[in-house]
Length: 239
Image (spheres, rainbow, N blue to C red):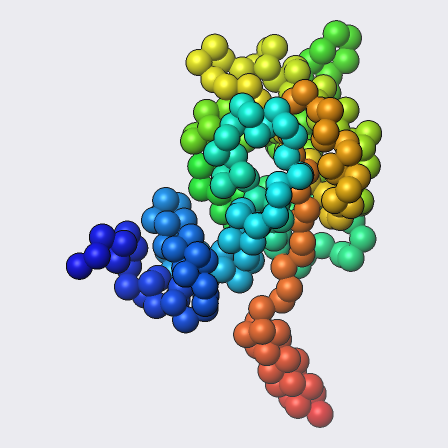
């Protein structure tokens, strides 16, 4: 039996074969499933969310040069686009609502980031001088062996947001990072990002940072159908 067939269960192989056409994508999902130890439902999710396009496609202009140099494997471990279950949020919401939703659905959120991410704290306090600042979400990445600060923005990417993130990274490296750990990484998570603006903003960044977009998950078809049937039953019962 070819060794590649032993990397994951047969149902995962069938899912990959039926849903992906190119040999490159199929090989990617087999190796990715093996590395992340994905179950069948998890594999379906990452295929639907196009993990291949997010992790492999493009020139990775959303990563700073410092991130590429200090963490050569980071393009394969950090997603460009993250899909978040925000069905409980209104169409317009504040950053605090976004953070709360992510914490509430942390299992799914971490799966979108990658299974090597360990959640540490929400609104992590960073005392600097006479003031205390708060990093939205703080993680630790087992594979890269570093702290990862995630800053959330409900709107479009703005270059000034990187200055705030880099300030937090400096505070983490000086006051929180342990001697055996690598420099902290910053992820700026925005609803929308102009690729050229991101490239310009990151071109001179001396910190290992990246900009990623998040997208709201659409209501699954089966959930929507169940809601329609439930509504129909209520309506018929009242008539």
